Amino acid sequence: MSMYRTSLAACLALALGCSSMAAAETTAQAMPETMDMLRHAIATQTVEGKNQVPAFARYLAGKLESAGFAQSDIEIIPVEQTAALVVHYRGSDKTLKPILLSGHMDVVAANPKDWQRDPFKLIEENGYLYGRGVADMKSNVIALAETFMRLKREHFVPKREMILVLSGDEETDMASTRELAKRHHDAEFLLNADAGGGTYDAHYKPVVYEIQAAEKTYADLRLTVTSPGGHSSEPDAPKNAIYRLAKALGKIAAYQFPVQHNEITLASLKATGEHSSGPIAEAMRAFAANPADAKAAAVLSADPAYVGQIRTTCIATMLDGGHALNALPQRADANINCRIFPGTHVASVQATLAKVIGDPGVQISARQPPPVESPASPLRKDLVEAVTATIRERFPGVDVVPGMSAGASDSMYFRNAGVPSYGVDPDFSKPNDTFAHGLNEKLRASEVPAALDFWHSLLTRLTQ
Image (cartoon, rainbow, N blue to C red; front, side):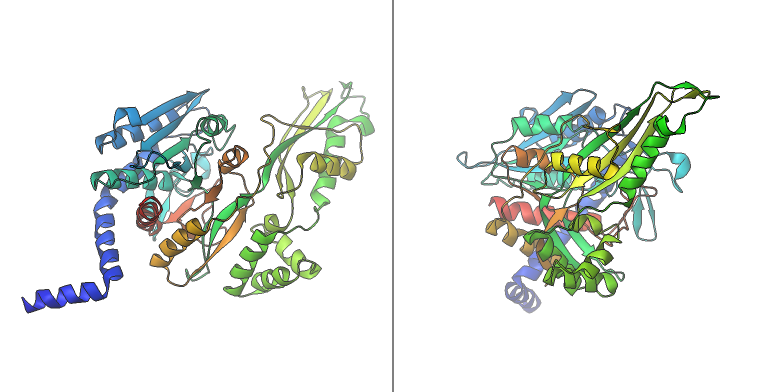
């Protein structure tokens, strides 16, 4: 009895610690189911053209229904060649607007011949999980689904409704995202599991956690050069469509857009720089203190991980030209992928590129769907406090700051529809370490149970 009283007194004195231990035990119990679901998710090839997103959505729907969700609260929305999944977790107060929880079920293509491991088989090696989508972003899709299932089994009733909105073509056309934003724009705010997140240093020490409150505008621009063509035995180099396009691309490659900044990027760079070392960290601190510091800007611009934080970027991603091996090309096209700093209009970027190219024969047009310019979301005190408390359960004292994504996410359509949106990916990683969209995509295995803890803690905080 005395030992019991001692343990009870210890728990009362260390209530937070005991609570964390209980949560960890529950997370440990959820891990086998979570990993089984993640293995299934990685094996389901939800790449463009395979038509597997609807099957994956049905799989998740079945799991959620088995955990106690009513069929009427689960909806699979067919959209073109893909699908979206919507799951309602009903709240007790019908007067409150819901919270949206966003992610995407699709992944970019992966050629097994190029990978060291089968990209569509979950493999664990040396503390990492490997597989297409393990970082971007099937591990978080599964973590969100598992958290919904866990809360339902715990008979948790939120005060505010939560709605899981999973798109099916975030990596391509975003048609399902547009449909979701059209249907669910009357929300308090959106939490996106595909943006924000934490940074480790080289020794896996947490540096900073960013809440994504803004993102750059995504735009695909087509460069087109046309020519009458002719027989290849009678070349006319100055009029050759491929040569003219190549010259234009060379000029774009040599050009850098002007340095830009806002309060969000300065806060992010300052916090990251203060907890890091080396030339990049010095440049972050210098730029945060003085955005006119050209030397600091040059150092950041030379690093692929940070150039997008201080400039608009445009880069060639695809080429197409010619129609026959023995004919002069009648047409040559290139895709220029631009990530445009908030506040800069797409039209001004097109005008800048036209001036840089200096050839009126090179046509520049925006590809469909039209680029979406979305405003930064205002930082909510209640949200920042809840995320900060949740992150510090894992890493006490770590700085939590606003951040801007250099890439694009589903949030842009919801922001454009008037829903404040925030990226709160629970994962921590070293810069350029996950290889998302690239070869041998990976994620630290320890991030999966940490994500389960994060979502359970954050969602109960925000909805009680």
